[in-house]
Length: 285
Image 1 (cartoon, rainbow, N blue to C red):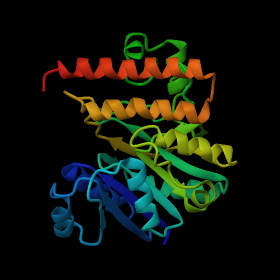
Image 2 (image 1 turned 90 degrees about the vertical axis):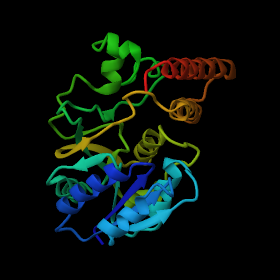
Image 3 (image 1 turned 90 degrees about the horizontal axis):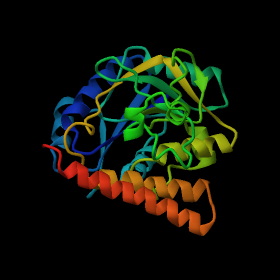
Image 4 (image 1 turned 120 degrees about the horizontal axis):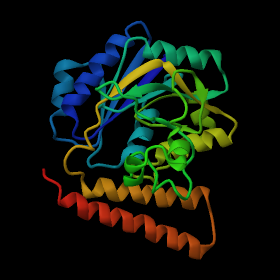
């Protein structure tokens, strides 16, 4: 088996069907298997898959166990030499699978190859980034300071906005929305850290791959469209809270520091989360 695709579904039945249609068309000439790990049983996904894609295997969790844990269940249920992690709201363009697999074949020390991801309007999604540092929570992709001052040096450094994203490049980490991962590297480095419920598990995994001597590479010949819906209207408080809790876990894991400084950083990060939840509650539905 050349390729195993693992898709974690959570209340995304309709986007998932579009994702599968694009994947099946692009991987038609590749020996592959597809596993959908369902974190939202009862939303109609199982019935839709049986009707439209009977060859897709479904792994059903009784509750939402989080992204990292669901990914690990999917990886353990598959056997391909390469595992493609794909969000249900992400659609591959033709040639993406071939480009990713070819890059991994030609570069045996590459653990993770990821495509150029763009938004439905054609604008670039900055899915390849530098490692986060102590200022990233103020200058990330969604932060107010980045929106107000997009050319500030901290946001540019983190999001790699000074690079045209048209050439292949080894990077610190890539988004888990779409990444092709060598199974050999997973065996050596280990699975995703299930201590992350959602968010930051991808940067942690890439960092561990790099620390073990593997490369993480952005491959722009492969392309995908990401239909991100979380930025429209209200965002679930749990999503906001888990995003920030993941930041705290990541920094404690990879940037141990003075306990007092760590406590202050934790307080600032979670205060930001509380303020975002409060502000989001006032947004129109």
